Each structure stands twice: as structure tokens, then as C-alpha cells.
Image (cartoon, rainbow, N blue to C red; front, side, top):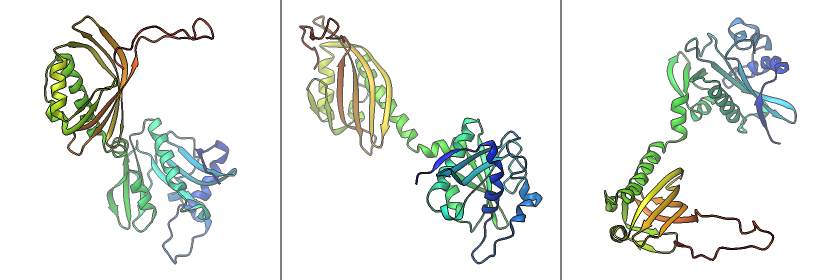
Amino acid sequence: MSTIIREIRPEEHDLLREFLYQAIYLPEGVEPPPRSVVDLPELQIYIADFGTRPGDHCMVGEIEKKVIGAAWCRIMEDYGHIDSSTPSLAISLLPEYRGQGTGTQLLNGLLLLLREYGYQQASLSVQRENPALHLYQRTGFQIVAEKDTEYLMLWDAAQAMQQENPDMEAEKHRESRIRQWFSMWLDKQDTGIEELFAPDAVYIESWGPEYHGSGKIKLWFDEWNTRGTVQRWDIRQYFHKENQTVVEWSFQCAMTDGTVQSFDGLSLIHWNEAGQICFLQEFGCNENRYDPYAQGENPVFREEQALWF
């Protein structure tokens, strides 16, 4: 059975009464209170007239048209209150649907919704012994205060984004190093080839030449620049995954014999633990493209030799 995570509908607001009751933490061996406990003023603030105030947001989990869980928030002076602009959260599932990952889905869905509405933080209160504490920590909540047997926790949108991409600084550094490499060619100046590339690096050009070692890459760089000039090497975008980067670019150069070469391309780059390039392979696509079927069903290809494949 698949779970649908969606926003609550106005006609479903009454369901929050049951989910508020299910949200009450009961230590092992403690008898559950009567359902009328949710009518107490300190609990009614979570659900009374829900949907009528700014900051009232709720995501529900649905299985086969049955709502089985909810994560909701509102700006209120509850146990998790921080200030008048920070929503406080509550979450619960029907007992038979717990422990299946739906709580994580609900909480992540609600936090994403809060981001879309421009909220920078959210808070909650949780009993120290409540297993849900680990759920909140996994989704980016941090303990900011202790109140008797409870923790006051805060989710910060900016910090959460950094946690979601812990390699952000490394990626920025890699992009800077790639720009340095491209600039070397544009400026015809070696500003650190043997520091940028690992001693045993492998560099493969799109049309076949292959260079082994940073010393050989430097030799190629110095020699090539006596025969040509890179006129343009524009970066379009980067993609990062683990120790790899893909950079999309557009390139043009002019050789001393008057030949001009232009093409689009990609570089697949592997990085070592020291932050050096240990492998780089280029893939190219001729910039001077055409449709061989423009005149009909029989292809007409240009009688020209690719300059760089």
C-alpha cells in the first residue's frame, strides 16, 4: 500500500482532534487518558478553528482514501512556543501505521511547505523519552532549551539547507578550480597546473589524445599554446555527485594556420581526497550543426572533416 502525502482539505480539519489525541506521549505502562483530554484549553490551542489563522498548515498521510497521520503547525503559545512569527509543530499517526516511515514523510512535507510560504524556522516540544526525538533530529531540529522533562527544539531553514548539502563548500572549491583551469587557457598562463592535477592524473581530449601525469599535462599546455589561442571557453553549468563533477561548456579556438574550431562539450572530472583532479575526460559536440533530412527522407551530409574528433 502506497502512502499519499498531501495538504489537508478544509472538510478534514475535524480529524485533527483524533490526531491531537494520538500525539500525546504515553510512557510505557501509563494508561491512556480519556479522549476528552483534548478539550483542555492547553490542548485546544493546537486545533481550535484550525485553518482560519496565518501559519495554519497541515500535511496528511492517506492510504486507500483513509487519512492515517497528520503533521500540522500554527503560530501559538504552546509548549513549543519560540516567538510570534515561528510556527509550532505537532505530528502523529494512527497506532497501526507507526514505524513505517510515514512520520518522516509527513514532517519533511510540512517543512517543505513552510519553506514555500517563506518561514525561516519552526519549533516543537518533545518529551525527552519520546522516541520521536530521533525523528526530529534527523529532519534538522536542534535542541535549544530544556524544560523539566521536555526539550524545546528549533528547525532553521538555512541550517537545514546546509545539512542537506554538506559538500556545498567542497563543490564551490571545485568550481573555482575548474574556472582556474579554463582561465589558464584564456590567459595562456600556467597558474598552477601541477597543483591542480594529481601527479598521476589522466587527461583525455574528446578527439583522442591522452596525457598521463601532471607533468605531461603541463607539457601539452605549454606546447599547444605555441600553436593556437583559446578565444572562448564559457562555462554553462555544473553537476556534482560524490567525488565527481561534470561541467558543461562552449569552446572556441584559433590555430596559427588560420583554422577556427568551435564546439560544445562536457568534462567528466574525478577528484582525489586532496582536492586535485585525478581524471578528466572531455566529450564534444560540433557547434556547426545541421539537419541532414532537411531536404527529404534521404540524408545529405556535409563533405567536411571534423576538426577535433
